[in-house]
Length: 363
Ligand code: HEC
Ligand code: HEC
Ligand code: HEC
Image (cartoon, rainbow, N blue to C red; front, side, top):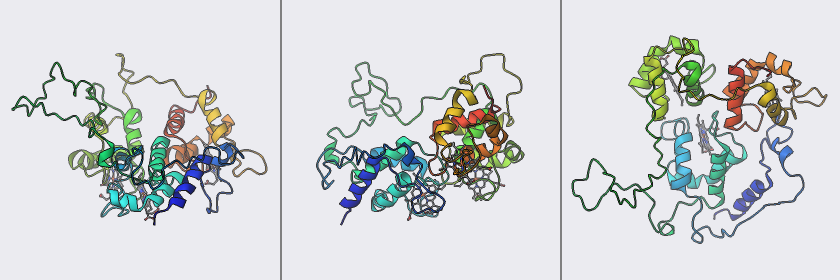
């Protein structure tokens, strides 16, 4: 029957912080995560909670429909489903439930899914929690008030179809509730640029399939390639909406790409706009400022000049990192294959990207 033992095992693994990254994989002599794990402290937080059967009992803390499904929709549907790279459609509850241990293995233990794409640690944790707690969906009876769906049904008025007039006493609609819909995006006054916004979108949404040796050789993260084929991009992304394959761009990103193409697909802003551009000003990323520390904690256990080093490039040395910044960009930002076995969090990866895009300055 169902794997209470596996569940406990999974909980124990999570609790100890020892993900089996690389176990059984020949290239990895040890699991990098282990370095950070509290050594010893035998099963410190192994809480095999009171989730006995998982059938009824306590209110469901992590639900398929509410928590797991949106993550699957966002991260998996471009490759998973009928006629896609892998036929298992995780947006179907029965499929996800039947494969929950496999999902745990690939998302939490090995972290090799979503294939070639980043996924936030918090999303991974949520999926892990969901499996550990029995991979349940929210049973109807646990939620007394069936979800705060913004039901636009103002009872008294009969014709209230189109405009949900904000009634002054609105009790239910008072709080706009965190909807999935992003707030009406500000109208784009300035044409987006490739370096500014578009490249990021292409890295996130296209590079898992596009590039040398991938499903399609066009590397849209390279400006010259994207610019040369911008008419094809207009056709596929804006007109047909057939790209990204299997997963259309979210509205906000679609608007940026469209505005960029309509504005002539510029690489960078023509001249420093005198008006305060509505771009968020970010603290510049420098080696001394943020990167050296990041490389020390995340790379130096394998990359150093000791005789036992797995790789002799010491990235905590500025000259070494600067000289190979393009390789770092490729492995960390584009492929996400470094740090080996334990990819950076999105925010750290973004730091590395900004550092190199900005010229990889020392300080
Ligand atoms: C870019 C494409 C891509 C994305 C995105 C992706 N997958 Fe996959 N997935 C694959 C391919 C291809 C396979 C089959 C090859 C393999 O097992 O590595 C696969 C296999 C799997 C398997 C093993 C299935 C089996 O029958 O052995 C699991 C589990 C899985 N994916 C989970 C996920 C989840 C969950 C997500 C989203 C959070 C996801 N994948 C996102 C491409 C992808
Ligand atoms: C899940 C995989 C996948 C993703 C994600 C994806 N593509 Fe594609 N793309 C393909 C494949 C496969 C082809 C070749 C077959 C075809 O044309 O449909 C292709 C073809 C194209 C073409 C036609 C190329 C030509 O030479 O005519 C364009 C343009 C394109 N993609 C743009 C994009 C853009 C832009 C993105 C991201 C915003 C994107 N694609 C994301 C798989 C993908
Ligand atoms: C668990 C060990 C490990 C960790 C952690 C790790 N690497 Fe690596 N790295 C390797 C190994 C082994 C190689 C050589 C094999 C290969 O290229 O895959 C390598 C190769 C590379 C290369 C290619 C070097 C070249 O000359 O082309 C780059 C770039 C790189 N790593 C960057 C990083 C960065 C940046 C970090 C930290 C953010 C990091 N790595 C963390 C093990 C690791």
